[in-house]
Amino acid sequence: MSTTIGICSCDGNIQNLGKPGCLPELQAPATLVFALRKKEDGTDNCIDPSVTLDQAAVDALFKNEIARDRFLPLLSVKGYTPEQADPTTDEASNGDIDIVREGVESAVFEFRCANPNTLKAKLKAMACLDVTVFIIDTDGNIIGEANTAGKLCGRRVAKNSLNAKVLPRSFDGVNKIELSYNYDLASGSEKVDYIKAGDFTDTSLLDVEALNDVNIEFVGNPGLSGGTFKLFLDWGSIGDKIPVTGLTPTELIGYNQDTPGTVTLLTCTDTVLDGTYIYTHAAESAGEIFNIQGNGATIQGVYDTKRLASVSGTLTA
Amino acid sequence: MVEIKGVQFNPEGVRKMSKSAFVKIVETMKDSSNGRAKWPQSMDGEEVYDQLRKEIGLYKEPSKEPYKKKSKKDK
Image (cartoon, rainbow over all chains, first blue to last red; front, side):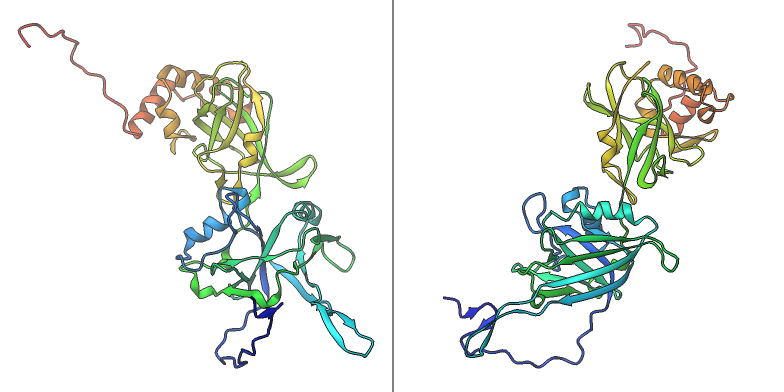
């Protein structure tokens, strides 16, 4: 039988309250990191501090090919207001007051963003998911909560509590977004733990980069041995999205869906660096469905080219 | 990547392409109605193909000796 009710020890084995003077103090947030609670294989999406936390390990978290397993950093926190509501209490007729439930813990973050509306759409898409958050502080420590296997997981966000409020530019303020959420009651602050910046080898979490979703649009139908396509981000005005420039023929590859197989690009040039690529390859058959995708891996630098494969064109002579 | 006359070629693409297919692409790109895509007129398909194959170590010099069928005596 458990000796505790909630976190209260009932066996008299109380803990001493001494604390070392050399304990490093966690700092204010620099980056907020979202991650789905469970990976694609059903295991917890956490950081294992027992492995070498080098650049490869950091890339495996932040540039993971499996989107569900990937850590999503939201850089440059400009404001942070942690809050905890008062606990819910039950007052008896004789005046005794019992705490029934701890108050909800919440956090409000502020970010500057030239187009906060696009960012809002991306953030709101997570609201109904089982997400967790880590905080990278200004010293590069990463803060989350420990699980029973000794790994650092993100703190659980209460479902449907995540809200993104756009604060458009005014005469006395820049464009910004205010992100708020509640922590799940099962994710109490007494579980908070961290991995210190010094445990990362030759890399710093303050240097992580956020990936960008890349979209494709064929200009006309793809030809039998080449054609033209545009690569662009979700960001920008409706008819003029920000182009993705400078990808090379070794980073992209064609794919014939009707005669399933990859088609190696011979050339793929974005001559005037406006995101319009002219490409060539060995001739394919007319009428077949063709698309462009990331070569081998969908992460190319800071770009996630996974969406490219979802847009196809019919090969036309 | 191998650059010839300002065009970046993917060595893997060259490896997988026949000479005739390559020459056809060069001719198309030189004549492209899309001005942005135009490749230099001085680009000779066969010459560039051989040059690219040299760069990636696949080119074999054609033999200067005329082909001679081995006689029974040579065997």
